[in-house]
Structure formats: C-alpha cells, structure tokens
Image (cartoon, rainbow over all chains, first blue to last red; front, side):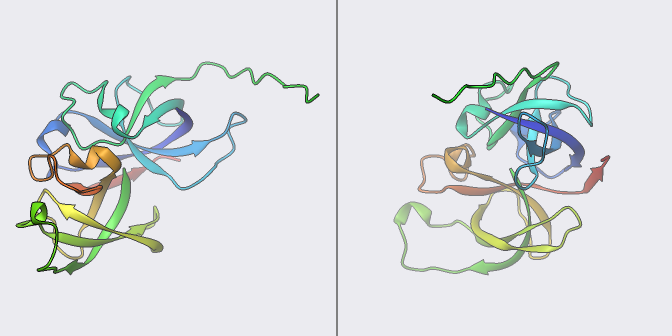
Amino acid sequence: MFFGKVIGTIWATRKNPALEKLKMLLVQPVDSSRASTGAPIIAVDTVGAGSGETVCYVTAREATIPLPDSFAPVDAAIIGIVDRIDPEVIETM
Amino acid sequence: MVLGKVIGTVWATRKDENLTGMKFLIVRHIDLEYRLKDQYVVAVDSVGAGVGEVVLVASGSSARQTEVTKNKPVDAVIMAIVDKLDLTD
C-alpha cells in the first residue's frame, strides 16, 4: 500500500467493460510527509476520493479485489482517504 | 495503470502459441503534458487502440484479467483509450 495525492481525473469511453461506471483518478505518489515520490499513476477510485486529497492505494492484482467486478485489468485502486499521518520516529539503536 | 501513447506495432510469427491472434502495440510512457518519456512497453491491445492514441496500460498479473489475455503469458495490456485528462493540481 502506498500514499498518494489525487491530482486529476481520466475520462475514457472506450475501455474494458469491467471499468464501466468506475472513476479513474490521477494519483501522484507521496511519502509520509506528503512529498512527491515517483511518476504519477492512474488508480481506480473505490472510496469516493476527491482531487487534492491524500489517499492510500493498493497495486498489482490485489487492486482488483475491491472492484464490483474483480475480473478487471486494474493494477492500482484507491482504498482509503487519509485523515492524519503520525509517522513514529524509530530511534536507531 | 500508466499513461502512454501508441507509437507502433510489433509483428512476430514465431512466438508462444498462446499468443496467436493478439495485437502487440508499442506504448511509450507520456507525462501529464503528453510529452514522450523514455520508458516504453510492448502491450497487448484489448480495446482496439490505434497508433497515435493515448491509452492506459495495466501491468503485472492484472494484465491477464481480460477476455483476450486470460491465461496467456501477457504482463501488459491496453485496457482503455483516454478521451480526456483533467488536471486539478
């Protein structure tokens, strides 16, 4: 699972049928201090995330599990909207 | 999924027999201003994409979750043709 910030939306009419009625959002991966890390990806929204929100997304085949039809070619899905991040400072020995 | 632009086609007569009948398109990754990036992938087309079109590519095992690529040795599939990209940031 990774953190990301929603920065946009993708519109596609010609697509795999399992993606009908699903919102595809543009997500910028971020770290726990919300700094960008890596190239933006597209993830299916399963929790009603809005643009600008920090979210949690899951990748690979597991991303199809929360979908209405899990036989779908999806490799990233937003599964949570972050309220707060409390990064524990791990004291190195 | 990643955003890409179809820039060409791969033709291969000698290949795994599971792959017969599939269209292999070369998809170059693009950034949010549609500029071509260095990475590219050869993806199986499952939605009738043509050269020049902006598409979405799903990778890994998820790529086998379509009628065209089910149980086939495929790890990248074109599963959507992008009409519009709305940037709000």
